[in-house]
Image (cartoon, rainbow, N blue to C red):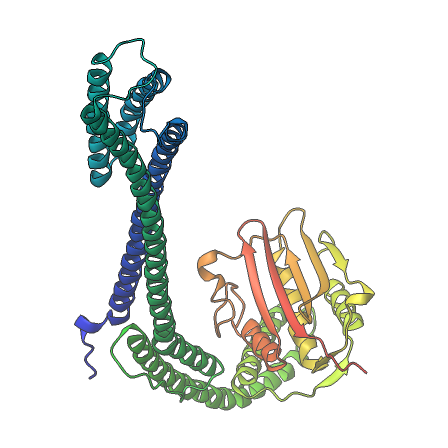
Length: 488
């Protein structure tokens, strides 16, 4: 007895689940890193934009500063009234600049430089007012008080240097941020490429795993199913392991063994039935001959003649059952030949119609000439099959009002399709799949072997026969036969 480890029964399912979770984690990680990096890049872009705004302010301030320096009489180291007024305006401009710059600047070092610039401005402005008040308001040139003037010029130079330093530092910060942002972008791209490579490797490994542990075994199962379906019950599946596919292979092997045992039992029973049929057939034939002899002794008007006729009918029925049983049990010898069957179909329909079928049944025949290809079949045995199907259709319409039979042929997927449709009571869904089983019948007078033999004959010619039914509406039998490609 084989014991299946239930704990490892769903090994593939667990592994696939873990792989899916790992892929989900990696993709989520990649998404989070991407979002974080995009946010970081946006933040850096905002900072650089802020520095660029500050740079515009500082450049504007630098232009004002350079204008003052160019207009000064630096060689004489003098301040005149006009220059004092300009520095007063310059002080107001710096004050406005400081108010705007404090809002835009976030760098600590740049803030210190701004603070130092503000201090220089205040000191210079204070000294300028003090020096100016020490002289007559109507002076043209300051050429005295060398010490205050020296301090004033020194403060002025410090103010301009602070402005220049502010410009240099702001430019340096912008360059640094641009370089850092570029480096961060490259690092981000590297990280993303690395993660994508990891995901790609995981996908490749996942594909390899699926191919080796799932696809290959499933293909082997498909091959095994085809072999078993073709009747090779000795075919065994060699699948190692106790995962789901291994369990399926093990179950399929068990099913094959069971089918083989059932098949052997069926063959034994069928052989027994054939033997019994052979043994019964000879006595039945003797009884039939005896009944015929007795029948000849009675005139037609004799009341016992009816009983003798009933006996003859039952003997013929038993003989038919024995013949069907023998036909089903023994191999079907085929006498294949290339032929067209349209005329044969029409002849069979006319024969059945004129052999006691009710006139109330309406026949609709749709057999275009172009749907009469060359087939490679045993025409004699095919005639038996088609006649059996047509007779069943006529019998199903007994007592049906508005009875109608439709017979049509067409070509589909290199096969000739022959449909026989009747609007009789139909076949219940729960028994439709049993209709081709041996000894299954819904008739009071039937052996249950007619359709089973018909299916065996059609399949021996590489064709098939199917049934579909809508209870209370219609039943459709479809015979499919392969078209002979080399018709010439």
